[in-house]
Image (cartoon, rainbow, N blue to C red):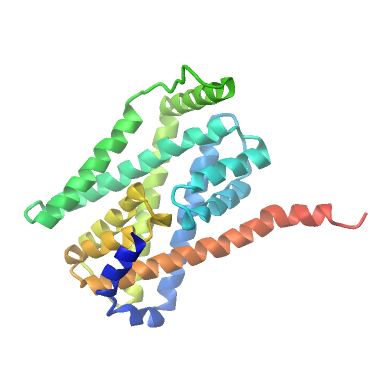
Length: 299
Protein backbone atom coordinates (compact mmCIF):
# COMPACT_ATOMS: atom_id res chain seq x y z
CA UNK A 1 0.00 0.00 0.00
CA UNK A 2 2.80 2.39 0.87
CA UNK A 3 4.44 1.66 -2.48
CA UNK A 4 1.23 2.51 -4.35
CA UNK A 5 0.79 5.72 -2.37
CA UNK A 6 4.43 6.64 -2.98
CA UNK A 7 4.01 6.18 -6.74
CA UNK A 8 0.93 8.40 -6.68
CA UNK A 9 2.76 10.96 -4.55
CA UNK A 10 5.64 11.25 -7.02
CA UNK A 11 3.18 12.73 -9.51
CA UNK A 12 2.65 15.69 -7.15
CA UNK A 13 6.22 16.17 -5.89
CA UNK A 14 6.86 19.43 -7.76
CA UNK A 15 6.72 21.65 -4.68
CA UNK A 16 8.83 19.61 -2.28
CA UNK A 17 11.86 21.86 -2.69
CA UNK A 18 9.96 24.46 -0.67
CA UNK A 19 10.51 22.31 2.40
CA UNK A 20 14.11 23.53 2.49
CA UNK A 21 13.01 27.15 2.87
CA UNK A 22 10.21 26.74 5.41
CA UNK A 23 9.77 29.69 7.77
CA UNK A 24 11.42 28.93 11.15
CA UNK A 25 8.82 30.78 13.24
CA UNK A 26 6.02 28.79 11.65
CA UNK A 27 7.91 25.58 12.37
CA UNK A 28 8.25 26.60 16.02
CA UNK A 29 4.52 27.28 16.15
CA UNK A 30 3.80 23.86 14.65
CA UNK A 31 6.04 22.22 17.24
CA UNK A 32 4.21 24.01 20.06
CA UNK A 33 0.89 22.80 18.65
CA UNK A 34 2.17 19.21 18.67
CA UNK A 35 3.23 19.58 22.29
CA UNK A 36 -0.10 21.19 23.17
CA UNK A 37 -2.00 18.23 21.76
CA UNK A 38 0.14 15.78 23.74
CA UNK A 39 -0.33 17.79 26.95
CA UNK A 40 -4.11 17.79 26.52
CA UNK A 41 -4.12 14.10 25.64
CA UNK A 42 -2.20 13.25 28.80
CA UNK A 43 -4.51 15.47 30.86
CA UNK A 44 -7.56 13.61 29.59
CA UNK A 45 -5.95 10.31 30.56
CA UNK A 46 -4.83 11.56 33.97
CA UNK A 47 -8.21 13.00 34.93
CA UNK A 48 -10.07 9.96 33.66
CA UNK A 49 -7.84 7.62 35.64
CA UNK A 50 -8.41 9.83 38.68
CA UNK A 51 -12.14 9.31 38.21
CA UNK A 52 -11.51 5.57 38.23
CA UNK A 53 -9.54 5.86 41.48
CA UNK A 54 -5.94 6.24 40.27
CA UNK A 55 -4.21 9.54 41.14
CA UNK A 56 -1.07 9.92 39.00
CA UNK A 57 1.49 12.75 38.65
CA UNK A 58 0.76 14.97 35.61
CA UNK A 59 4.37 15.05 34.38
CA UNK A 60 4.72 11.28 34.43
CA UNK A 61 1.42 10.74 32.62
CA UNK A 62 2.57 13.23 30.00
CA UNK A 63 5.85 11.34 29.61
CA UNK A 64 4.10 8.01 29.20
CA UNK A 65 1.64 9.56 26.76
CA UNK A 66 4.44 10.86 24.55
CA UNK A 67 6.36 7.58 24.75
CA UNK A 68 3.23 5.67 23.74
CA UNK A 69 3.07 7.71 20.52
CA UNK A 70 6.40 6.28 19.32
CA UNK A 71 5.18 2.70 18.63
CA UNK A 72 2.50 4.13 16.34
CA UNK A 73 5.32 5.33 14.09
CA UNK A 74 6.37 1.71 13.61
CA UNK A 75 3.19 -0.36 13.88
CA UNK A 76 -0.41 0.82 13.43
CA UNK A 77 -2.69 0.98 16.48
CA UNK A 78 -0.05 0.09 19.07
CA UNK A 79 0.09 3.35 21.00
CA UNK A 80 -2.59 2.75 23.60
CA UNK A 81 -1.32 -0.75 24.27
CA UNK A 82 2.12 0.68 25.03
CA UNK A 83 0.55 3.29 27.31
CA UNK A 84 -1.41 0.60 29.17
CA UNK A 85 1.74 -1.44 29.72
CA UNK A 86 3.57 1.64 30.98
CA UNK A 87 0.81 2.52 33.43
CA UNK A 88 0.73 -1.02 34.70
CA UNK A 89 4.49 -1.29 35.11
CA UNK A 90 4.94 2.02 36.95
CA UNK A 91 1.69 2.44 38.89
CA UNK A 92 -0.05 -0.91 38.87
CA UNK A 93 -3.01 0.31 36.83
CA UNK A 94 -4.77 -2.85 35.59
CA UNK A 95 -4.86 -3.36 31.84
CA UNK A 96 -8.64 -3.64 32.05
CA UNK A 97 -8.85 -0.12 33.48
CA UNK A 98 -6.42 1.55 31.09
CA UNK A 99 -7.87 -0.45 28.22
CA UNK A 100 -11.33 0.88 28.99
CA UNK A 101 -10.11 4.36 28.03
CA UNK A 102 -9.17 3.41 24.49
CA UNK A 103 -12.54 3.06 22.78
CA UNK A 104 -14.40 5.95 24.50
CA UNK A 105 -11.58 8.44 23.86
CA UNK A 106 -11.03 7.30 20.28
CA UNK A 107 -14.78 7.43 19.61
CA UNK A 108 -15.19 10.89 21.15
CA UNK A 109 -12.20 12.16 19.18
CA UNK A 110 -13.76 10.93 15.95
CA UNK A 111 -17.11 12.47 16.93
CA UNK A 112 -15.43 15.87 17.26
CA UNK A 113 -13.42 15.54 14.04
CA UNK A 114 -16.25 14.13 11.92
CA UNK A 115 -18.87 16.57 13.26
CA UNK A 116 -16.65 19.59 12.62
CA UNK A 117 -15.65 18.33 9.19
CA UNK A 118 -19.23 17.54 8.16
CA UNK A 119 -20.46 20.94 9.35
CA UNK A 120 -17.78 22.91 7.47
CA UNK A 121 -18.11 20.75 4.37
CA UNK A 122 -21.87 21.00 4.05
CA UNK A 123 -22.31 24.61 5.18
CA UNK A 124 -19.46 26.11 3.16
CA UNK A 125 -19.03 23.85 0.14
CA UNK A 126 -22.35 22.03 -0.10
CA UNK A 127 -22.87 18.71 -1.83
CA UNK A 128 -22.97 19.77 -5.47
CA UNK A 129 -19.81 18.05 -6.73
CA UNK A 130 -19.04 14.35 -6.49
CA UNK A 131 -15.85 15.12 -4.53
CA UNK A 132 -17.72 17.21 -1.97
CA UNK A 133 -20.40 14.53 -1.66
CA UNK A 134 -17.85 11.79 -1.05
CA UNK A 135 -16.08 13.83 1.62
CA UNK A 136 -19.36 14.68 3.34
CA UNK A 137 -20.58 11.07 3.25
CA UNK A 138 -17.29 9.89 4.75
CA UNK A 139 -17.55 12.43 7.56
CA UNK A 140 -21.19 11.45 8.16
CA UNK A 141 -20.44 7.72 8.21
CA UNK A 142 -17.63 8.10 10.74
CA UNK A 143 -19.80 10.44 12.82
CA UNK A 144 -22.68 7.95 12.98
CA UNK A 145 -20.42 4.99 13.75
CA UNK A 146 -18.42 6.77 16.45
CA UNK A 147 -21.52 8.26 18.05
CA UNK A 148 -23.17 4.84 18.15
CA UNK A 149 -20.15 3.34 19.90
CA UNK A 150 -20.47 5.98 22.61
CA UNK A 151 -24.26 5.94 23.01
CA UNK A 152 -25.12 2.26 22.56
CA UNK A 153 -24.46 -0.06 25.49
CA UNK A 154 -23.11 -3.47 24.54
CA UNK A 155 -22.18 -5.65 27.49
CA UNK A 156 -18.86 -7.44 27.09
CA UNK A 157 -19.06 -11.03 28.24
CA UNK A 158 -17.21 -14.23 27.39
CA UNK A 159 -19.29 -17.22 28.52
CA UNK A 160 -16.48 -19.67 27.83
CA UNK A 161 -12.75 -19.40 28.20
CA UNK A 162 -10.05 -19.20 30.88
CA UNK A 163 -11.23 -17.63 34.15
CA UNK A 164 -8.54 -14.92 34.00
CA UNK A 165 -9.67 -13.84 30.52
CA UNK A 166 -13.33 -13.74 31.58
CA UNK A 167 -12.44 -11.73 34.68
CA UNK A 168 -10.39 -9.29 32.58
CA UNK A 169 -13.27 -8.72 30.16
CA UNK A 170 -15.71 -8.21 33.03
CA UNK A 171 -13.43 -5.61 34.66
CA UNK A 172 -12.98 -3.91 31.29
CA UNK A 173 -16.74 -3.77 30.81
CA UNK A 174 -17.31 -2.41 34.33
CA UNK A 175 -14.71 0.36 33.89
CA UNK A 176 -16.11 1.29 30.48
CA UNK A 177 -19.65 1.41 31.89
CA UNK A 178 -18.47 3.68 34.71
CA UNK A 179 -16.89 6.10 32.25
CA UNK A 180 -19.86 6.13 29.91
CA UNK A 181 -22.18 6.89 32.79
CA UNK A 182 -20.06 9.80 33.98
CA UNK A 183 -21.23 13.15 32.61
CA UNK A 184 -18.11 14.85 33.91
CA UNK A 185 -15.90 12.46 31.93
CA UNK A 186 -17.85 12.95 28.70
CA UNK A 187 -18.04 16.74 29.06
CA UNK A 188 -14.40 17.17 30.08
CA UNK A 189 -13.09 14.84 27.38
CA UNK A 190 -15.30 16.45 24.73
CA UNK A 191 -14.10 19.96 25.58
CA UNK A 192 -10.42 19.00 25.65
CA UNK A 193 -10.78 17.05 22.40
CA UNK A 194 -12.31 20.13 20.76
CA UNK A 195 -9.26 22.15 21.77
CA UNK A 196 -6.98 19.39 20.47
CA UNK A 197 -8.85 19.43 17.16
CA UNK A 198 -8.44 23.21 16.92
CA UNK A 199 -4.70 22.90 17.63
CA UNK A 200 -4.31 20.35 14.85
CA UNK A 201 -6.07 22.67 12.39
CA UNK A 202 -3.88 25.56 13.57
CA UNK A 203 -0.77 23.42 13.06
CA UNK A 204 -1.90 22.66 9.52
CA UNK A 205 -2.50 26.35 8.85
CA UNK A 206 1.02 27.11 10.09
CA UNK A 207 2.35 24.46 7.72
CA UNK A 208 0.75 26.30 4.79
CA UNK A 209 2.15 29.59 6.07
CA UNK A 210 5.61 28.06 6.49
CA UNK A 211 5.69 27.27 2.77
CA UNK A 212 4.18 30.62 1.69
CA UNK A 213 0.81 29.27 0.58
CA UNK A 214 -2.47 31.13 1.11
CA UNK A 215 -5.26 28.52 1.09
CA UNK A 216 -8.97 29.01 1.60
CA UNK A 217 -9.49 28.74 5.36
CA UNK A 218 -12.61 26.57 5.19
CA UNK A 219 -10.92 24.27 2.70
CA UNK A 220 -7.85 24.14 4.92
CA UNK A 221 -10.02 23.05 7.85
CA UNK A 222 -11.71 20.34 5.80
CA UNK A 223 -8.32 19.10 4.55
CA UNK A 224 -6.92 18.90 8.07
CA UNK A 225 -10.01 17.18 9.50
CA UNK A 226 -10.32 14.76 6.58
CA UNK A 227 -6.66 13.86 6.96
CA UNK A 228 -7.00 13.31 10.73
CA UNK A 229 -10.01 11.06 10.13
CA UNK A 230 -7.77 8.65 8.21
CA UNK A 231 -6.45 7.41 11.56
CA UNK A 232 -9.71 5.44 11.76
CA UNK A 233 -8.67 3.50 8.66
CA UNK A 234 -5.00 3.30 9.65
CA UNK A 235 -3.53 0.29 7.89
CA UNK A 236 -0.05 1.82 7.94
CA UNK A 237 2.02 3.20 10.86
CA UNK A 238 0.50 6.52 11.91
CA UNK A 239 -1.77 6.40 8.84
CA UNK A 240 1.35 7.12 6.80
CA UNK A 241 0.39 7.77 3.20
CA UNK A 242 -3.35 7.57 3.87
CA UNK A 243 -3.44 10.91 5.65
CA UNK A 244 -1.31 12.57 2.99
CA UNK A 245 -3.50 11.12 0.23
CA UNK A 246 -6.64 12.45 1.94
CA UNK A 247 -5.10 15.92 2.23
CA UNK A 248 -4.13 15.93 -1.44
CA UNK A 249 -7.66 14.82 -2.32
CA UNK A 250 -8.98 17.97 -0.60
CA UNK A 251 -6.56 20.30 -2.41
CA UNK A 252 -9.31 21.68 -4.64
CA UNK A 253 -11.36 22.74 -1.62
CA UNK A 254 -8.35 24.54 -0.14
CA UNK A 255 -7.81 26.26 -3.51
CA UNK A 256 -4.22 25.07 -3.82
CA UNK A 257 -2.57 22.60 -6.17
CA UNK A 258 -2.21 18.91 -5.22
CA UNK A 259 1.56 19.42 -5.23
CA UNK A 260 1.21 22.21 -2.65
CA UNK A 261 -1.06 20.06 -0.47
CA UNK A 262 1.43 17.19 -0.60
CA UNK A 263 4.31 19.45 0.40
CA UNK A 264 2.31 20.81 3.33
CA UNK A 265 1.23 17.32 4.42
CA UNK A 266 4.83 16.08 4.35
CA UNK A 267 6.05 19.10 6.32
CA UNK A 268 3.33 18.52 8.90
CA UNK A 269 4.32 14.86 9.15
CA UNK A 270 8.03 15.68 9.52
CA UNK A 271 7.48 18.27 12.26
CA UNK A 272 5.05 16.04 14.17
CA UNK A 273 7.38 13.04 14.00
CA UNK A 274 10.48 15.03 14.97
CA UNK A 275 8.77 16.64 17.97
CA UNK A 276 7.41 13.31 19.20
CA UNK A 277 10.79 11.57 18.88
CA UNK A 278 12.75 14.35 20.59
CA UNK A 279 10.18 14.78 23.36
CA UNK A 280 9.95 11.02 23.86
CA UNK A 281 13.73 10.86 24.29
CA UNK A 282 13.64 13.60 26.91
CA UNK A 283 10.70 11.96 28.69
CA UNK A 284 12.45 8.59 28.71
CA UNK A 285 15.51 10.22 30.26
CA UNK A 286 13.32 11.98 32.83
CA UNK A 287 11.21 8.94 33.72
CA UNK A 288 13.79 6.17 33.63
CA UNK A 289 17.18 7.88 33.67
CA UNK A 290 16.81 9.35 37.13
CA UNK A 291 15.79 5.98 38.57
CA UNK A 292 18.73 4.26 36.87
CA UNK A 293 21.14 6.87 38.22
CA UNK A 294 19.72 6.46 41.71
CA UNK A 295 20.11 2.69 41.62
CA UNK A 296 23.59 2.93 40.14
CA UNK A 297 24.86 5.58 42.53
CA UNK A 298 27.67 5.11 45.05
CA UNK A 299 26.93 3.01 48.08
